[in-house]
Length: 348
Length: 201
Image (cartoon, rainbow over all chains, first blue to last red; front, side, top):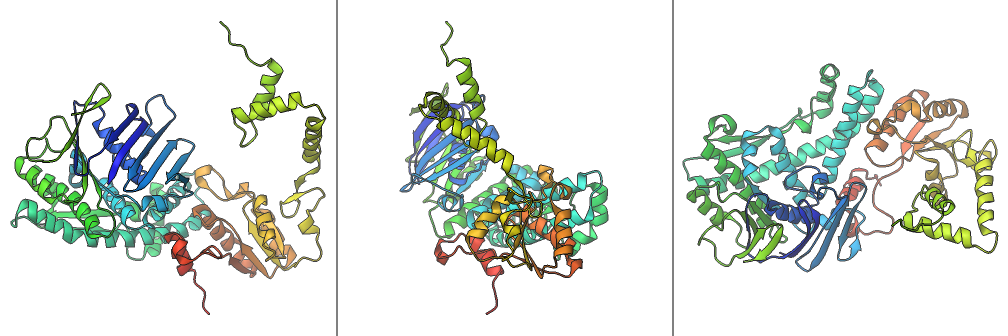
């Protein structure tokens, strides 16, 4: 568990230090008091990425150049400092050359009311869902994703130039295909592993009369290299790479029908919740420490049935950091509660 | 009230020193004060060494390594194997390879790698010179020792395609486990590369 957390120049906080409980820790306060930023600090500390944004630049407090997060996870001291020029990862007082060892320690599942975008939004949030999961299960996932994205951006830069030169494009085909094939295979395996868990969790929340199924729709044909070669005239016309894992999508069906078009608002919320709970359960089944759960402002959005289902299905052994505008009454015992007022934190 | 500062010449000196790589404001100040207060002529010796080095050193006309003559020591050395060429990104990559003593052939520094995101195109690199050398110098093997990242891979691919028609044997250095390291200490990606680049026995 994360026993304490310190933030410096994170979002609205110049400095903040908080000791967290082993079960539920609540952060109660009005909108704009920085509740979500505390959860974000915990996420950045354990995963070196924010659950909110894909870049860390907006996490830096306005007018400052860098931020730092630190804390004690189980028996280890973790610390991460970020500035535009430099990232520093410190684990048990030793600076790390790369993030691989560090990222092996803690795992995170984040619940937020924007999760509905997983069902309703474009394919990007669904790829991010898989990437967030994949990088916490497989240590090669993140470097592979990074390499693929770099090859893709390089190739797209060539396609956007005034006269794209075939030989230069071809030189980038190989890294694109090599990293892309591995990324595609990893995502397909992830989707296969999460699908039955998501279906089971969904049954527990929604009852047996509704079913959730999912599978990965690949952004390229099985033979990526051939698919890429076949798309050459189209990519020259559109000036971007048109096939590949950057076009992957997670297909979600409720009762056999695409969830985005045919599910009701309530069904969509249930499906989104099931996807996130499935992540938590998958980590729980894996060896290693139970995940840290970040639950951001969703109790208010959920009706009593779903809220009960959420509480029943959260991994019992996991530590939970929860934000809310009001303390959710009685249904939670042994909660540690903090109040946020005027950028100050008070133990209630 | 105006804050007291060092006189203008010292401030100038600090500002100049700060242009050097790895020198921050504190170090620049310490170096500047040492220069000014030095009782011997060490600072002048440094000035002379800078001038001498800048006048004497230039890139080798053939391989791009540091040289004082037309050709560098490596290119001028007649005892080296004339049939092997090792292609590197930067002139500074040559010395680490030399320290291994595993390679006795010649080098060619490209002066960078193809990187569209950094606006480096093939014509910004010493690629024409490489092709001219491969055609003229009759190597039996060209070895690529570029970085094992996306740009390094892409640049190697680009050069391989260019050099294939010459018929010369092309190879690249292996990627994998660090020497003396057990499997448990290697990260997953390195292990993955070591496995996929395995060698038949």
